[in-house]
Image 1: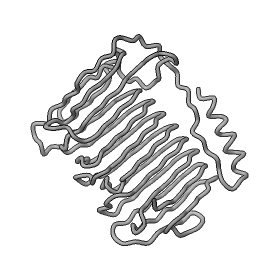
Image 2: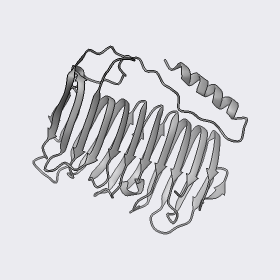
Image 3: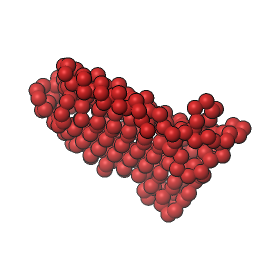
Image 4: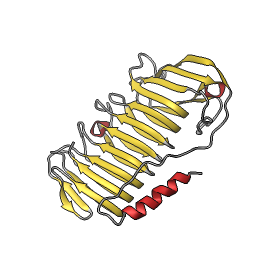
Length: 293
């Protein structure tokens, strides 16, 4: 299904003889579907606040393929925004069952790309309110930006296939986040402001790709992070002054530690005061860069 991925494997095996590994994001070709298009349609997505503003809502966004942008800013609503599409199967549907709200395409789970050469569009622009949330985002092949700063996220789970994703917390999360789970395939992922997410534990699992995890922000409590990836370029950024320890597990991995980072082999740390980060990295093969900025 993914013939170009084989060349990545071969390249990694040869690069393992050198000091640094060269890891390129594979050009994945997904099986396409020949969708029938219709005139471009833009329609609102509006989900009211729950009756009890103090209750926690489980919000699930099942997107499929295309482009999705999520940010704070819904006024007097749980979700407010628009969906733009030109395929009937992409029409969004809102389902409410108790305290769980799901937004998904009427056509069901659509994780594949349209046939090459077709003019297909599927785009969600959503704003979320400040009610307490357990947020789940599921997507297939997509390009997205998620600005989640200033929300009240008690749990966050993101699962995607092939993606180009930027996730940022530009302001502190308004409540303690118990767990943050991120699972991605052959992707390019950039996570910034993670210190503002206020999580107790974070699990990041990626396939082949380029991944950046930036823990800038206001770290309010001790936190543990587990990072697992296959063939990848992985960058971990922890601002100077935040106490942190990184334990590296894996085989063919080149580690480049710069700035305040100290250590060799599979153990690295930097001194600081206040809440601490404990990070375990398990990488199959590739490059790990430890940075302060």
